Length: 199
Image 1: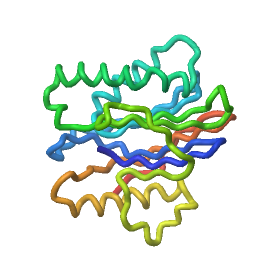
Image 2 (image 1 turned 60 degrees about the vertical axis):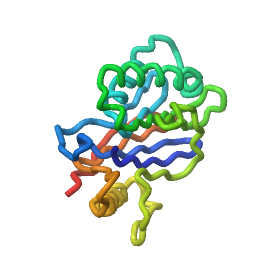
Image 3 (image 1 turned 135 degrees about the vertical axis):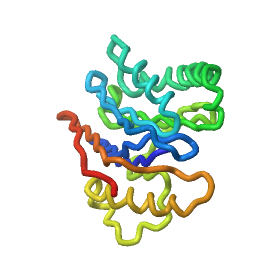
């Protein structure tokens, strides 16, 4: 699992992720990007949980040579993710103990607005619509003192609070670390930058 914080409205999407990779036992093999922009289809794809699924999925999305957009991709995503997840679980039985969640954010050709979708392994990657606003994963129980209106500037503060919260768990702990990466997309373009390290 990972930290994923996102904000969407009709005109923009901002996605903040940490970069720490980890095994279920907590060992960390390194770092990786957990959100990627695809300017040719006006989308950002992010993932939590299984890095194997996320990495294969972004490869498949990027290989599409024809013009798509977020709603057109959504039509085919559940079945494609189900198939990919079956293949990965057959190849790597240890994945059966993991979960995976994929997020798509992008401009719709139909409405001209940002649309967001989430696909979770638990309900077999069914397509779920994401309402506009701020999303925080894992859910932060106590946000006292955090100015959420300053997002994405408060992303480091949110993630540090998540690290503290998760460190107090004995089971189902989410490991968060590395640096805080921001993907920001508007109609005029896309930017990617770091807000610094989580210490």
